[in-house]
Image 1 (cartoon, rainbow over the protein chains, first blue to last red):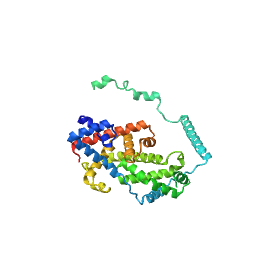
Image 2 (cartoon, each protein chain N blue to C red; image 1 turned 120 degrees about the vertical axis):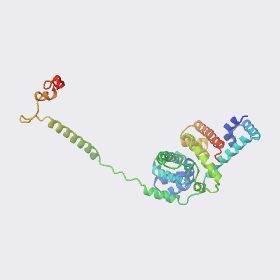
Image 3 (cartoon, helix red, strand yellow; image 1 turned 30 degrees about the vertical axis):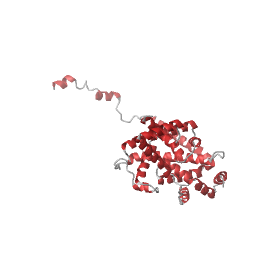
Image 4 (spheres, rainbow over the protein chains, first blue to last red; image 1 turned 60 degrees about the vertical axis):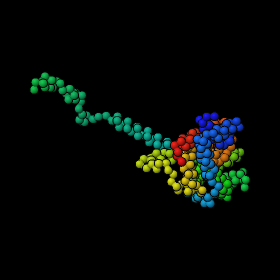
Length: 142
Length: 189
């Protein structure tokens, strides 16, 4: 069995979860290959860390801390608003909004008085079209 | 008090039942959280959140289901949420921070009795390898290896099929092995 093939199955070999034939093949390879044997031992030691990390110690203050945290983070009571308030509020806001729009439209429709001073189209044209006032030839000859 | 009695009393808000629940499942929850976050203090903080969630949600617990499976599920979800939140925060905190060269401070190892320096480095290597696994594989591997749950129990916690769990754990082991071999070649220890 080649080293690459052994490396792929080493973790399963360490757990003993391979078929008997493969277990024997890998065991045979490890007897002959110091490199693979070294990695196998290294891998085994690393996986044993999991067993060391599992703690059976009970923190005696754990429950006290949970209780304190529970009391500090108690959910606030949900105050239910009455049904008529829940319906009345949006209706009132809608009426106000419509009133505002109506008022705006009415203000926009107010007619202009005769006394107001505004520039008419006829009076505006000379300012928009200056070519008749100052021909280009006069400008270039100056 | 048996499991049914604990649930019934807990649903009525009985404090003694809650205390017993915490005593019965404290180790299980802390170990599960530790298997995912790899820090004892964080694991205990998350475990406290788990029990608070259990207390608040016990009214919705279906009496036919297994209590331990439900608690495992909450513990896994809380731990994964913690990891995701931590990753986001780390992204900002890493700016301007010195790279410690991947060396684990000795204090972290001293939390666990019987650790030598070599074991500290092995633990760090193992944690990095487990952290590099995709989420599903990481959860399945942790529940199977740290909590010694059977494949059937893992499938109930994760709410996936048995064949999915077998596949997840198989792939997780292969990935871990590959990662650890790369470390071995680089002589990380």
